[in-house]
Image (cartoon, rainbow, N blue to C red; front, side, top):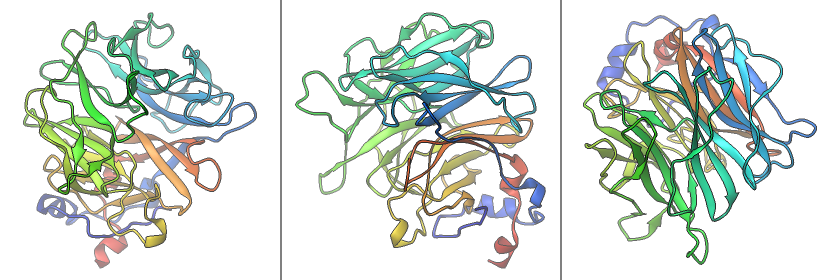
Length: 386
């Protein structure tokens, strides 16, 4: 843990200039585990969630608390924990944020502070393999109570996946973007796990939604279908949107929209080398750089190929063209690190993510990892040696 990996990941000139002259990282700046929620009696899995800062300064983390099994279709509700010290420590007991209302479960939370000041809670309601769709509830009392749910996708009813911490609101237009992968419709002979990628868009603060003009199936140069799943988007400084998807093609695949997520060119392989595991990319408020959290496989050993380890971060000063040398948060060879929610508070980074053990539960443990933004820019003795 907390060792730094150096592989063939590209380092941009801007990133090299950034780290040049920086001092060595101190032990006090090293990433810390602020909260870890392993499974327990009657609670076989705790899974991914998202953060929101409340008006009284506290942080709220809402995650999925499973009750009758550890599978993706097992019963679960949404639970909340709170921090009053910028994410360093968290409350010890769950508060039920939303009881299960699905025939199977509810999960995959995105939390947003909307332009009108309310909190938006997006989540998946999973009824069956033919009906899994994102819903939206609102709170005007800082998460104490929630409105009735509104469907982001009314029709066609199908099995759509939207990861946690995925919905974004564009800065200039205020448009809401919900990136999803469609995997099943009632007319299908069987689910299409290779995925059809699309976005749902709202220009009235979530009151109504429409599908993007572009929907994407991805193929390689030989015409073979590439599995594209669990898309995310991030707004770039020039107003474009960058989409990134987990794939079985050896890297995150990316696409760029110039019209607020309505149309997209085909997804293409990137230099973000990874297994079939989701990444998270968001902008660091204090520096303006992008922060990427993912499983860096650019220099992975053969015995770990395909597994969701190590858990790494890198920064980009040129809006994703190049990335800094990755820093490792955790590198247990049996670790299973993924489904990362990212937020920033008082120059601290908080990552809420799955951190299980593939010998046992894979996705059964959720963890919050905290570190100062400056740690991302500090060098280590190994960096200097290289």
